[in-house]
Amino acid sequence: MRFIYTSRSKVPELLDDAGQPYFGEDYTFEFARDDFLHGGDMQCLGYIVSYGDALYRCLDAVRRLREQGLCVGLVNKCHANVVDEEALAKIGSSGFVLCVESQSTKTGLGIRLGSWLLERGLSPKYARCGTHREGCGGIWEHAYHQGYDSDSIMKKVRQLARTVAPKKMYPQERFHRSCGFKSVSTEMYTELAVEEDKLLGA
Image (cartoon, rainbow, N blue to C red; front, side, top):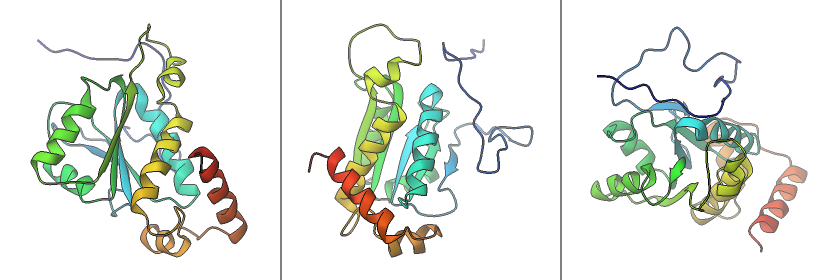
């Protein structure tokens, strides 16, 4: 017997930077293998791990953060109860890991992922975003109520990044070297730093 799980609401197709589907005809499914949508070919400052209907929100957040110069990777955890040892070692050696899901933060992937990291002696800064308030579910609007919409994800990543990144959260040259991005302008750097302080209540 096999089960096919789907979300209860429509979600957009996941496209790469070239506008092509991540999971198109040339994609080969491998059991227990995590998919890196960003950061698989480099070591990022930190990683977001997600799946299901939270994944496209994470993809939007990661792209916006990377455009601002923050080097964040994204992992699609298609097997929530199986460990990909290679992927886990990679994200576990980064500065932070954020698990984002539409399931309960008390019983979902976030609990397992944190335990898997600790069992292997990996200790990045760790946090979870997911369902934590009572109420009905099943529609996309609830992401905002539960705090796993794109803006909430970005805010949480900034909080984590600030604890592990040297100096400011947007050290221009560091991220330019590690990610190959153009370093942001002085004006943009200042604007981002001010925005960050506002978001964190500094």
